[in-house]
Image 1: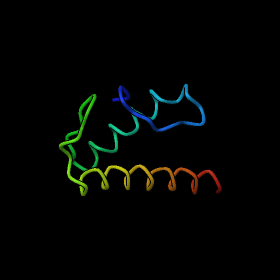
Image 2 (image 1 turned 90 degrees about the horizontal axis):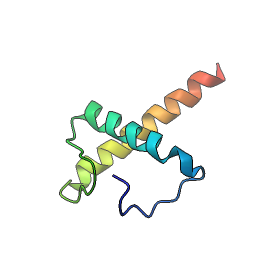
Image 3 (image 1 turned 90 degrees about the vertical axis):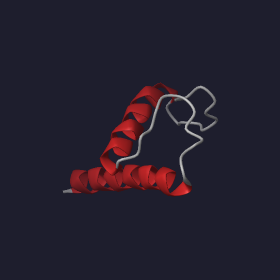
Image 4 (image 1 turned 135 degrees about the vertical axis):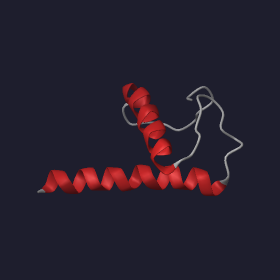
Length: 66
């Protein structure tokens, strides 16, 4: 998944964990994400994966504040 990825992570060692997280979120919203290039995804599909990732990160942060 990260072969041509130009996104920079603050902690480069987290790349594998972020890739797994992305795959989990894609499965949750029913998007067939595969390793490597996923250029055939629609904007709606890609957005739903990103939105699910943000939703889960916010939920995680909120639960840590309690």
